[in-house]
Length: 456
Image (tube, rainbow, N blue to C red):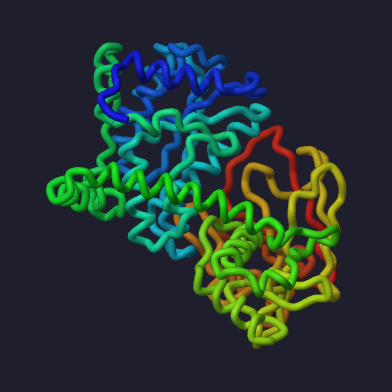
């Protein structure tokens, strides 16, 4: 779709709103970067009648402070002019780079993690809702091309979905250039992100170096790529229906179990079943296909289990069981996963270790502020290289425990609390030491997650 008029685009956004069966409980939200696309989408949603509407602006802490502050001012002025509520979320400077190093991922992926976590928390604070994002057709083709070059299968090549859970992307069929007349007719100002010109980011290299070559050598490349995406989408739907009888599913005991027949299925189904469950267990969007192949081939060749990548795949009476590796080969240690206890009390055990978890109201107990971490949590013993984030950097866990006067043996007894962003807390109280927490968000009114650890 190209050459759309402003009226056509407004009709597309209005149609997206009308497609909802009922108004969302928490209202409508829009991710507002301050750039031209999200500025146009915010204005389009206002004119299409999305109400109540709130914008969410995330400061990633990656650019010079003056540029970020100017962008925040522009966003405030825009929302005030349009009569839209605004939530500003800030990522601590250095946090994205630290996550990228720790997880072995790019800055873009780390920034996306923090951005979507901020979105989720704002929606949760308002009781839910729908989040509109300003991804355009230009973003879609760049995403598909990047995934193709990274070796993606049908699930990746299908591109971004227009509707996915609470996310809505009504502009996926609209070129960025088609938004310019709308912005001009409404006299809307926007900011330019200085990092968009940097070739340090993969998407920028695709945009500035690869796409001009494709446009010159293959004028119809975009249509061909979108056709590939449509075919991948159909194949992905077919694979998803076929894998359901073979998929890993949590049983009442919390184990992830799949029928042994999975080992005899086509490779595409085996890989899909493993990667989906592994992603859930590890809290990651992307899991190595090499890990899936190694684990499934090991069990297929007759081995009783395979351990790798923080997971263990093993045979069990029900078929196959996939779970987190609960120890560290070659050294003593413990590792227990903690999920949201909901309204009750959650108890987890591993050998002599017993962990009791429940939510308590702020002011009525001690614990971790709800806004300062994400599930799943892990309670574990220390490992070489562990570090805790502190204002202005990070600190070695070994150095911290040494400062507390704990010997080597005592240090192994101190429980560490970890989420997907790193160590959340060091619980040294039972060793006569202290408690130490990662700097986090939160304020009055946050619930606290109370943790009682015995037998470490």
